[in-house]
Image 1: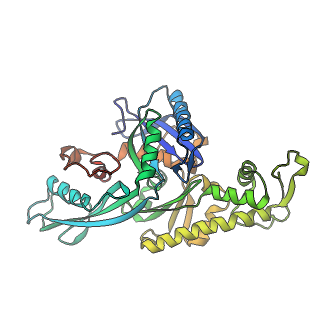
Image 2 (image 1 turned 90 degrees about the horizontal axis):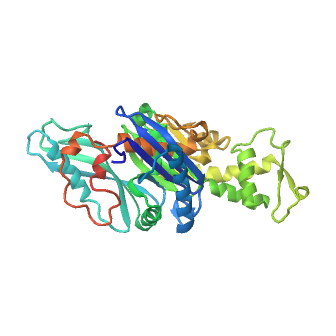
Image 3 (image 1 turned 90 degrees about the vertical axis):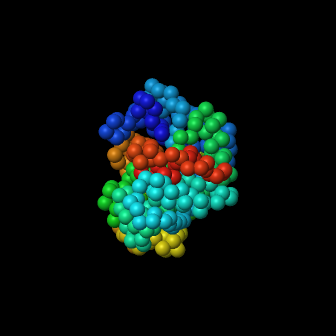
Length: 415
């Protein structure tokens, strides 16, 4: 459990472009109030994975220290997002015999544990094992089977895994900061917890979390996350394209993208001129003057490619129709002007920008789509905790070696 006795909970978002830490207090009624915020430019991370342990450690230390200083507290445990290791999901269906008697806690524990046996540790570690629906004698759609009667109890479990080496590098880096990992949540799942309204999670919606190094996808349906995936393209790729196309330094490319970037062309683009500093030129007089239309012509193809890859992943998974027509964009790269319009055209869905909800005390500067994942980690830590049924369940036999996370974590997702 992430909360201390004082109700303190901490979330750490380790991204390719920024590090972010929220320290919050959770009330007895489940209300979350952020009391400490720290964020800074990310270092040592590429596509969500640690590539320079020392640089990443320094960035994490500085980020956490800023949040601790603002909160006036010292944290020892953090909930961490996972975007490294190419997260992937699959659905596992299992059944056990209940011989016609009433379904009890022990039967639920037994069928969930049976699902765990289907996971064989290889080069991937288990992140989530979420019960998305039970069945009694083949009758699907059962949300809570306890108290019902039947011959066979079944469950469909959503299994999310990620590459072991990437997870261990992340764990080791956070450990060097004298922090314990209290839980891991795949990034688009956390973003969905913060940015989706209940009707969207019930009726079907797709979260597209557009980070700096990767774009992550999560499909929610029936109140649960049922599919996750990612594509190795993010906002940094757009910045690199601008730097190459306009022959400008990366820092200037990022500034130009932020100030003038747009994902769709407008009639005024030809008339608007942008000053573009050239690589190796120190004097502003040597800056190149280009119409905005050239900048748009560089940005649009990369974002179109991103959304086309997302569309193909959804269609290949079979969850495209289940997700309905609602798409919610989160992540820093989603804040580029015109991204929602372009996503709607490519995906043929209704698109909106998602911002953190159900979390109080977030400053305006940290209340945008780029901070949805960090806010979602807090919601996960407070509301996705076991209730009495799990407390009464003894832990099953030791979890196989290589499974990432604590024993019983896969139960905590639904109960």
